[in-house]
Length: 161
Picture 1: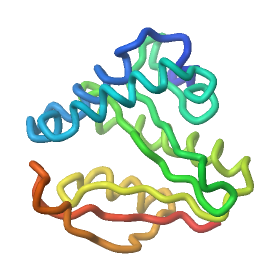
Picture 2: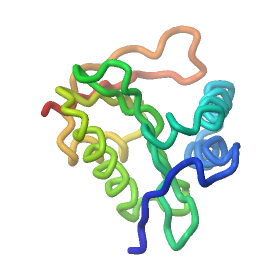
Picture 3: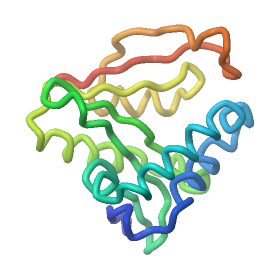
């Protein structure tokens, strides 16, 4: 595998949005529910590249961006929360998500954090399995709420150091 991890600042505005749209293209409800938030996220990171490069990275395969991960450090050292963590559809199921997650955990642990949190949805079974294989423990499930286009539950995981 020719996987590399790169600074987000080396990419153009819109790259994160495009990767999120591709990664969740299997169910149009994700884009319907999340598009505005994804656009705001992309804008925030590209407006604040020093934050993007410190609290996220791009995953590259043969020089092409295939995914990225980001985390929120505002509660350090108590915890960091993994935010977006996605791999483009054409590259799913090949182990790249696991490598990306392992690299993110490694980088987050450099901050002497006590816990790492992450949330996924009940229908994202591959993500659930990946987090569990990486040592995250299911802490709880909660309803997505009546206003959500997506139905079901959020699954909250914790990685205890």
